[in-house]
Length: 363
Image 1 (cartoon, rainbow, N blue to C red):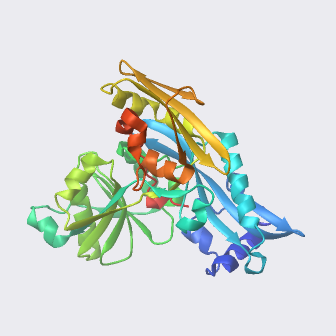
Image 2: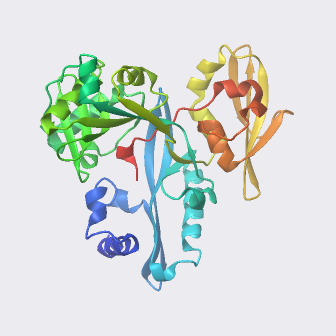
Image 3: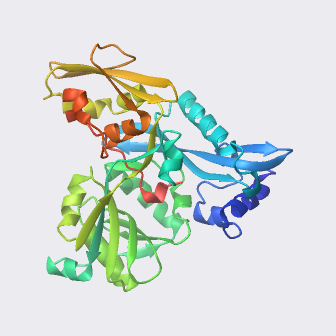
């Protein structure tokens, strides 16, 4: 804890950010208390911090499945200390820790080629929708009555109503997440909206409405902020809410969800076993062992379906074996272009696995 202020100055120098930027931008992460301090992996030379990798736990809920995701953030090395392998050493240490802790998946943002060296890849699919007043009026949408609420009032409402979202992060400190710089929270009898921006057009970071009135809530926020348009991002797997918002969207586009790394193939598949078992009920019988290769190591798991019953085991237990580079594996398992999924046979019909880390929870 006594190093925390020096640590903040270190990060600010590495990134060129303003004084205390990190506690303002990520108040749920950068705090001088024991839980937060455990997440900062630092390398010191002569007692001075020269490099850092943040390893933050993210509990992902996806259609009833639960898995721990290691969020990587704040990757930094002092300018004069770069090129000495410090970042590589810390990233490899983070990967080892995630394996030890049983976190089968990791996620981060940043340069794709840099992090592909360590096994991360852009994967998954999200949909960006733009809602304009004209488009909302065109289909007869009426703005809901919303009011802005401070973080301490909004947090318990967000905690409770976010449980209705099919893909979400189980937040440990929603009160701190809502204190992020530039975040505003709007409450209504029909749900809530979390936005970024002061006045005018809005970025919707999250919207939840158990009654299915997401468009009305967003229109209500536009009324309060004098905005003409709002952008909202949802996972491509969030089909029910997407179908409602696509009806009122003026335009839409798609892109990768985030950058992911599969730390433990068997652990990832087991985490999604309830969902995969449901998908397998109508699958033809098959068995296949899949290997993901990284730096000479191969992580292998075997999946089989017999009579609609799914089995997932660790290791190579089938003569039918296919192997992929770990970067290809992320796109294969989580969704992405440029991978020949036909090599998997019927298993391809059970994929991709639905993952989504909302931007509000990025680290």
